[in-house]
Image (cartoon, rainbow, N blue to C red; front, side, top):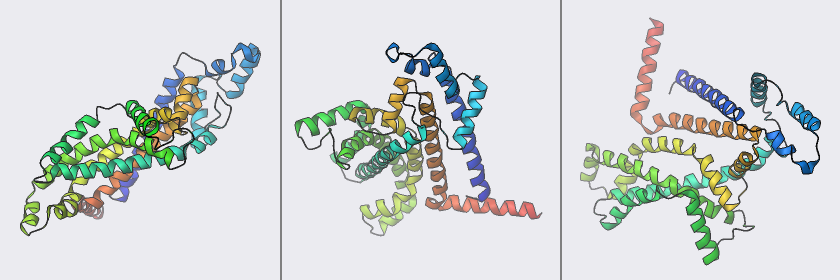
Length: 324
């Protein structure tokens, strides 16, 4: 990928983030609710309407919508996400506290999903695998139909309550990642395996695979050394798309397990109509999604020599036009 293409992708990413922020801001502003009134209007707090209006003015939510939009946008560009209307704490600090937990969960879930998808795809496409291959091919269709919250509840019931292997109340660092990782990885494994199976089948029908097999190479060698690398591009694309679903999955998973993170913070912000927190979470999720997909695009030429050659030819043609 040339420097011009990279700059073009970065420009597109900036536009996507701006549109995402604008749509999220307008949708949240259109909600028939008032976060300040919801938080401070409780009669038990003993605040008068004048005091509530003063709080609203201090937070800037009494300004016209256009002013609020640009003020908030400038704040986001400078790293100032505002304060939570529920707790009054800086949103940036809340995110800094919650983000590492969600990143650890996401990394473990993606890693586990990729490993399981590779193993299932290997068994499904292995010649002569028989019943095991049939099971590996049919399993993803079953896994994709399982709702995340149901998986989490079953895992807690079986491994925590029945077997007592994993604590769900005050677990250790590693112990607290086990069941949430499984819960989040299962629905990600299914589409990854399905895409990888189709890609592997197409690659295995290519003449070069038959040539390698005719030289006496084992099926394991052919799969890991020849077929897999030429089948990874669709999987990389799927990984980029699935990463965008991690925030939604984390909301369910972290809520079920009572785990600290962006997901639980999002659920609380929705319940409390905490607009600044919701805007920040949406923008962070969109930024992560854009960065992951940009990385995936940059990896394409590394994995596929044909794309590298195409980019080189295009760059040479562009240089000739400039010289002409």
